[in-house]
Image 1 (spheres, helix red, strand yellow):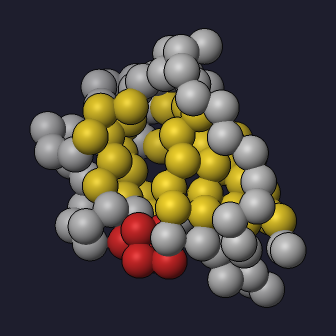
Image 2 (image 1 turned 180 degrees about the vertical axis):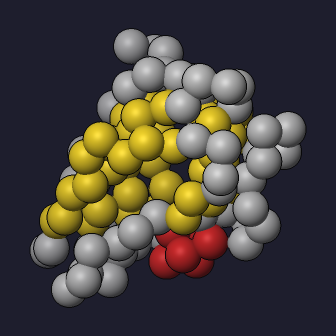
Length: 102
C-alpha cells in the first residue's frame, strides 16, 4: 500500500483538482478542512462558489472513494476566505476514516 500526503494546500477562488503525487494510483483521499468552508464536486465539472457540495471545517474528515471520484474531484472556497486543507492519498482502501463534527 502506498500512502502519500499533501499538507497546507490553499483553496482559493479558482477550482483545484487533487494533485496525486507520482508513484501512486489513488483510490481514496482523506481530507481535513482546517479553516474556511469549501465546495466540492466529483462529477467532472469544476466546483464553483455556488455549485457543489458544501463542506465546512467543523464537519470532521471528508473522504473521497474510488478512481473516478478522485480523478474528477474539484474544490473551491465557499466564501471570500481561502481554506487550508490537508490531504492523504491512499493506493487502496486501507487507511482511516473518522466521521462526525470536530
